[in-house]
Amino acid sequence: MRYAQIVMGPAGSGKSTYCTTILQHAENMKRTVNVINLDPAAEYFDYQPMADIRELIHLDDAMEDEDLRFGPNGGLVFCMEYLLQNLDWLEEQLGDDDDDYTIFDCPGQIELYTHMTVMKQLVDALQQWNFRVCGVFLIDSQFMVDSSKFLSGTMAALSVMVNLEIPHVNVLSKIDLLSKSAKKQLDNYLEPDPHNLLGEMETGSKWNQKYKNLTEAIGKLIDDYSLVRFYPLDIRDEENIGDLLLTVDNIIQFGEDADVKVREFEEPDEDERRPCADDL
Ligand SMILES: Nc1nc2c(ncn2[C@@H]2O[C@H](COP(=O)(O)OP(=O)(O)OP(=O)(O)O)[C@@H](O)[C@H]2O)c(=O)[nH]1
Ligand SMILES: [Mg+2]
Image (cartoon, rainbow, N blue to C red; front, side):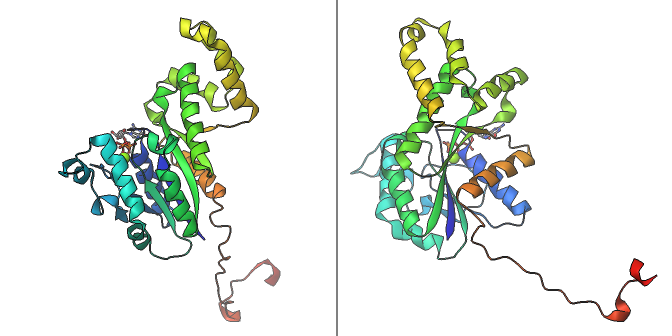
């Protein structure tokens, strides 16, 4: 069995930083994790990628081509479709190790995940190559500290979950940037009670008053089916990073199939044996 995380989220939500953070944490634990950059428009990231889509196609190739002349958004979609047409490239980059663990740093274009089929096709290919895949969807926690934004973030996460149909973890990134009061407010949303949240919204805008019933129905749906949960991530907190990695590992059952490692050691010779209480 092989293991993979697909790291998704809106532009600038912290995907590449998450990959670097998990990679460093794994290295500290003497664990081998690889990161593959799948963002054809990436300009900067801190990790050393095992493979980089820009060697196959770069966003500029799609934008500067005389025949294609894509803008940045269409160009990005084109690049991802190009990747799907050249999956043998990715398969070769991944090699044929067993029990390997790969993190895919994906582009920040939300429609790739919410309703297009590109990522779903990528996931299908990975599954065919024997990967157990977990989706990791990042949302910047700074946008999640009021009820209406929380609900819209939840709906975005939900549409990704429904579109990809894989085990899924939602992460609230950049917790270190929140003020003390914002952090407190965020606590209300980590184990959200939609009724409380909706109570907060009632005094809101005209829009909220008009669509109160709709919002209430959405909140109830999310609550009734326990559909969406968020894990906060503070990249300065090693314990927090370890807990999140453990959550994802459990979801993809990483390590469950591994053989038990038995360390062989020799019994010390009689004369080398240290005296113990029984000898006295
Ligand atoms: N303080 C802080 N800054 C962060 C964190 N995560 C990301 N950032 C910053 O937010 C910016 C965007 O982070 P990236 O990791 O590049 O985000 P991304 O989702 O990969 O962005 P795109 O690939 O452009 O969509 C960078 O300036 C990061 O340094 C975090 O947890 N804490
Ligand atoms: Mg990035």
